[in-house]
Image (cartoon, rainbow, N blue to C red):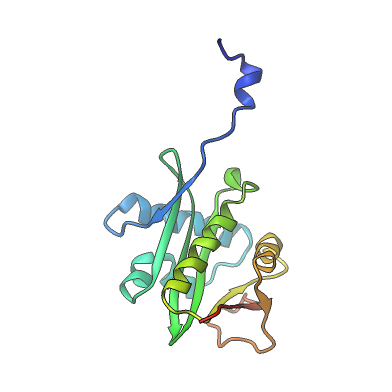
Length: 170
C-alpha cells in the first residue's frame, strides 16, 4: 500500500537517541554551543560566565559528562553534568531545539543525567535557572522531583534567579 501525503504526516517521528558527546567531533562541539546559544540569546540570558560551560570539553576534562540527543543524524538536544564538590553535582546547559520540544526529550536528557549522577555517588544534584524566562524548564525540573533551595547558591550567573536541588539516596 502506498502512503498518501495525509498518512505520511501522521507517521511518528523517529525517536531521538541520547549518547555521550564525542569531544573529538567538531560538529558535536559546535552543535552543543549553538543549541545553548539559541536559548540563551533568545531569552536574553547570555552572560560572559556562560562561556566555560558552552565548551563541553572543559566539563568533561574536569571529570564531568556531556550528552547529545540525535534524531536521525541531526543533533536536537544536549546537556552536561559537572561535579561541584564531594557528592554534589550540577546540571548544566540543557537544551532542546524548538522543533523537537514537546516530545519529552528534555525529560529524557535530565533522566540520563540523574542516572549518571547516581552512578557517580551523587547525593545532591543541583541546577540554576531563570524561573520567569524558562518556565517550561522549571516545570520539568519540578515534575522530576527538584525543589527550590532556601539558600541561594554561590552563583557566577547574574541571571540565575532560581536554585533547585534533587536529593538522591546514597
